Length: 154
Image (cartoon, rainbow, N blue to C red; front, side, top):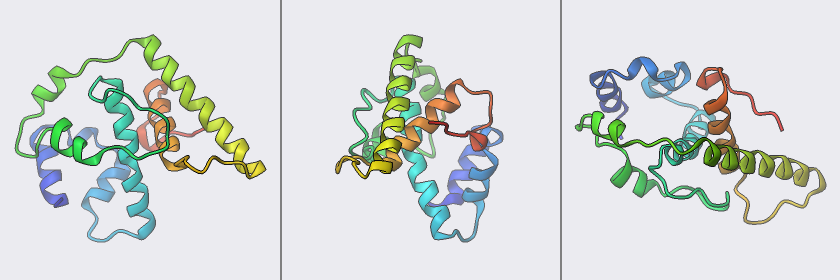
């Protein structure tokens, strides 16, 4: 995707001011390091979690596979030429109990995964970066910190 088109659309929809400073840097960079590309690429997993929280994704499941980017782009997110208002109006925040249960599950899985790394017993099918990004999204949901400033404690 052409980042200039994305930035223009975000500005046109009057949501550019809500994009985090780090993401603004990524979206407007002429070049990115491999590490920046990797970090940005994994952010889609945090986005998937946030979409789950507003009932746009049915289930998160275990962090053993990456999110379905084709569904994300083709079916969930508004197209770059479409207004965002319909998407926002259709968002339905899940109940606080559902959010708490999933947040707690992700937090506990992250704690167990960190312990498993220490003892070299990490499950073969775990995708650790998916788990981290889910934890990141949940931390942001109940934090007062800005998106770029979230710290993950386990």
